Image 1 (cartoon, rainbow, N blue to C red):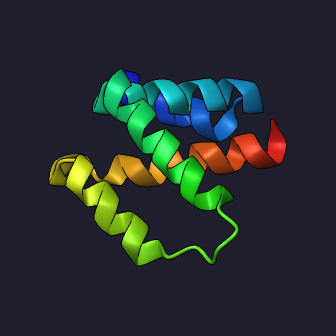
Image 2: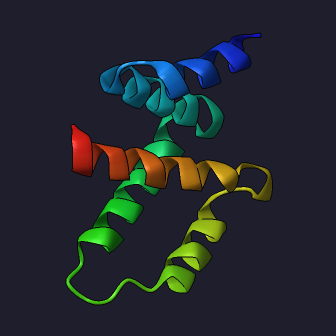
Length: 87
């Protein structure tokens, strides 16, 4: 039931609460060290002046993240997007 409650809070809560829940969800699944590595990699690629190569970034991340956890990479991307645009 915790997962359902967490998803509901992500959809209905204050933005700050959503950011914290999304961050904790990703850390819980990936572990803090891998989360920070993925977060830093995505953030760095997005900030580069060159055109973003989604395929190259995805290939790099697939080397870091187990196939069963690759979905959390998209959640980290969402987290970064929210932080850049709204927080």
